[in-house]
Length: 203
Ligand SMILES: Nc1nc2c(c(=O)[nH]1)N[C@H]1C(S)=C(S)[C@@H](COP(=O)(O)O)O[C@H]1N2
Ligand SMILES: [Mo]
Image 1 (cartoon, protein in one colour):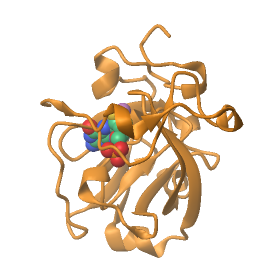
Image 2 (cartoon, protein in one colour):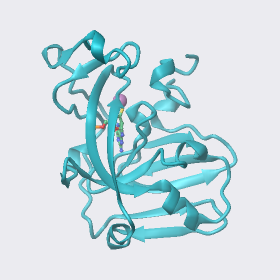
Image 3 (cartoon, helix red, strand yellow):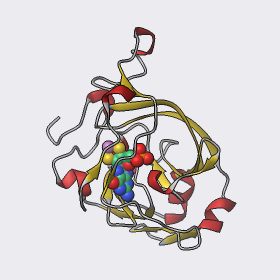
């Protein structure tokens, strides 16, 4: 992984007014644009190349782009929070809930590691990906997701800091141990709850 490209620049961020205090987690600012945060290079994955595999359940399950589009999709409106302190309110996405996908994996162990094209990875308990809390998304604001934002398909787990939402996702590795991903190996939190400001390992 190389340099982290940051979209952070002062004039595009502002403090939330009091009316939004309950929407914006502690230490966060509102972003007017949609910053791009990538460790390393943008991955260019075609829809024909893309597939998603869940390993580590009693059944290995895999979906191509066409398989994913054939599944019932949900429209998601949600706020997203990056650990570099920007928050974006009311983003709209279209995608398939992980509940649907994990149901095809049989019995599953406790932890999940999201794996991306390009080598990025991030971990969460499986229980954070079920119960309508996570989606594989393929549309943003009604359009295909731009490559820089993780298209054609990325994970969306909005209850956690956005580093827990892998762009260009290709696999989910399930296991009984909690294996750290890219940022977690560099001292970031294993859980990453923005409301509890779980930025670094000991937060
Ligand atoms: N594959 C991959 N996914 C990733 C990252 C990355 O570097 N590579 N960065 C993470 C971080 S730190 C954030 S804040 C969000 C940024 O998503 P965005 O670039 O669409 O704003 O993607 C997350 N997912
Ligand atoms: Mo981030």
